[in-house]
Image 1 (cartoon, helix red, strand yellow):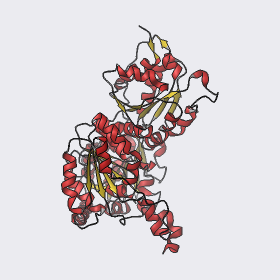
Image 2 (cartoon, one colour):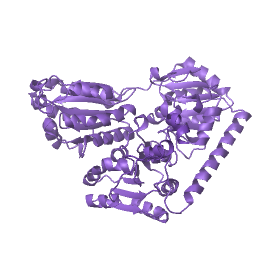
Image 3 (cartoon, one colour):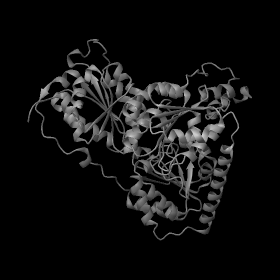
Length: 565
């Protein structure tokens, strides 16, 4: 075989893994890789404006595609440090991002060289594993291991540092082994005896509930979950951020549960006598680690592929280690002859009536067309305007938290949020990655004005690469969550809460995108439909009532409640 450079070896390894998109920001440390990408006709390079947002694109791409998302940081030092927030976000979401970072020349390490930083130590806390290449000939091996590690249960981001001298070195590569697609991890089912015991417990329940989490969504196991729920006569609530675990138009769909969910789904968790926690840790966003959000007397059956997650936050009657979809299928087979009791059927009927009332109340509140625009008006107008295949990305912040349980998630996967990292500035960039993974589906990104201001430069990326998402900027001129806390618990002593913004619709037009502005409630339906139909990258700047503020984390300020009152 002919000699190749280390940079060429990186690209050949990416090709061997079936990579079709690489997100990145050019820099001198990895020029050999970028030059090799020039000839890689099967890989589309997406040049971004900031490494952080580029990793969010790779994160969104990974979650939507079910494979790995790849980001290439061309510059050591600042180019690498900019990756950290994006990797921390992917780490919290168990998203398989492969980050390749140009690194200092081997001979310059520990010499306080230009742009020197210990990238190995930098990435370690926010990745499943971090490597630094030590020999050019090992580049194919280490890229291959990066993909294997990122995609192995439990999935997550990895980082590979590429010293620039090794990228320039030439060597004769060894024959490549099997690509990742042929080394795929086989999802494991649960222990048959534990499945049998769980089926018995579920069959005896009077008020069963399935709480479906990221394990259901990531395994694309909605069909198995629905079939099991129908067999049990049980509603299916979703853990926060996974409201698309099953399609929202299924009769057993309850929406998100817990302190950030809706009242009907949350009531189910407080009333259930047996809870099947399917692919969920029952973590912070679902429970706040409190029995305020779960029935203390409920028997919990927890299914998780990560053994350390089973029973970690709440005692369980049964813990099953396995893939959520496989275990749901096993339980369905074990309950093949089961018929729900009259009591279970009555409980399900009551849930459906409560759910119908909730939807009716939301539609009624959202139907108003009085100014100023209230968040509920936007949510309902958007839900009516989007097609059935719509995919949504959300930021952190109270406006997006309220929206997550109100959008129509008809075709899983269709919801992508910051999850436990609670990151502001995630949604727009993530939506660009989601759209590249699913180019034939409609992608809508919701953000507050503050978060969009952090990432607005990526409009240029969307335009340059023809990535036609629609970004809805909910513009209330402030950091809404914090301003609500200052109002409710700190005597309206506002500091740093108000933010002046440019006209984001005009900013979009300056980049060459479509820009729309909605200042009056009567404009919502028409402008949203126009933006969705425009066929190019679009930004819709929606003027939301600045007084429509909500304090989500009231539990954090109990110590100030009396003083504020």
